[in-house]
Length: 56
Image (tube, rainbow, N blue to C red; front, side, top):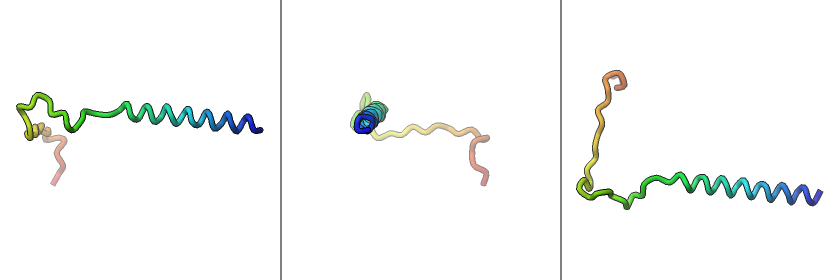
């Protein structure tokens, strides 16, 4: 019984490690990375088709 508990703890630690590693690999672009620098502070908006606009 002691060996099965130890194996369960070890497998849980391995699964948790892989989950943590997977979540850290999903990072996006850094906020400090501004790219080329010529569009600093500008926001580009995309037009929304009339079918997708909310009805008011």
